[in-house]
Length: 101
Image (tube, rainbow, N blue to C red; front, side, top):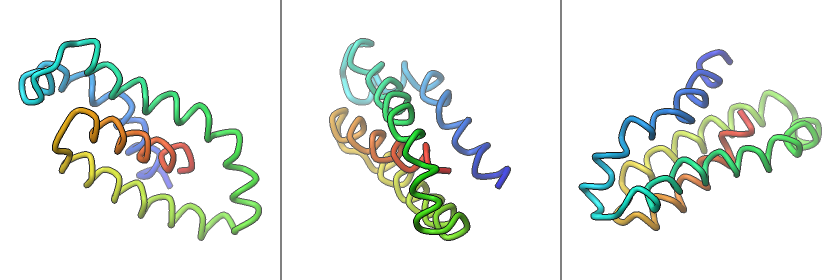
C-alpha cells in the first residue's frame, strides 16, 4: 500500500522536473506543458471524493489492486505519448486511477 501511495505522490511532482525536456521534444511553450501537471492534479481532486464509495461497492482490496494495475498502464501510455495532447489525455487517465490508489 505504501508503494502505491508513493508512486502517486511521486507522479504528482515528477513532471515539474521534465518541463524543459517536454518543451523541447514536443515543441510547445511552457503554458501548454503545464497542462500535463494541471490535468493530473485536477483529475485527482475530482475523483478522490468518489473513491470511498467505489471501494465500498467493489471491495477495498480488489479496488486497490485494479487501480494499481490501471495506474501502471496509464504510466506506460504516458511514456508512449506521441504528442502533447495525447500526453495530457493519458495524464487525465492516470489521474483518475491515481486518485483511487
